[in-house]
Image 1 (tube, helix red, strand yellow):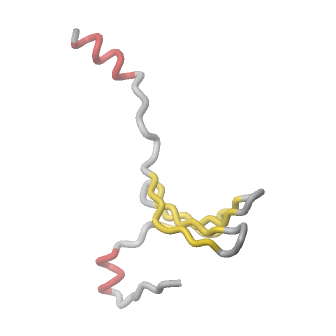
Image 2 (cartoon, one colour):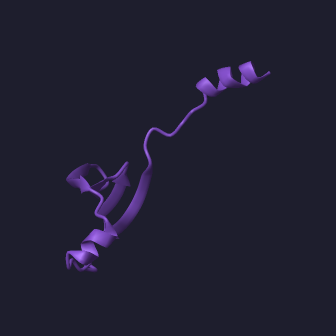
Image 3 (cartoon, helix red, strand yellow):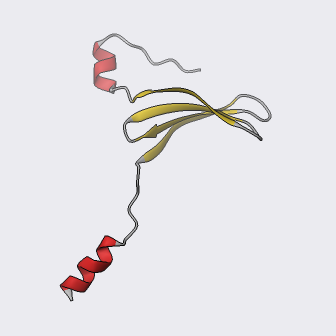
Length: 76
């Protein structure tokens, strides 16, 4: 029975990436900016009704290192 369970475990779907939506902001009637964390990288997207564009991509900042470096979060 354990061998059969191990066999089926091989074919079980696993998430390929850890995805978290960090922020979203509507810019107007049809445009939105999304900040998405994907496996330790932060991506900033602008999306409209017919297109989606990648604006920036960088490593997710560490909150402890930002505070010690004197960085201040801004609310936009």
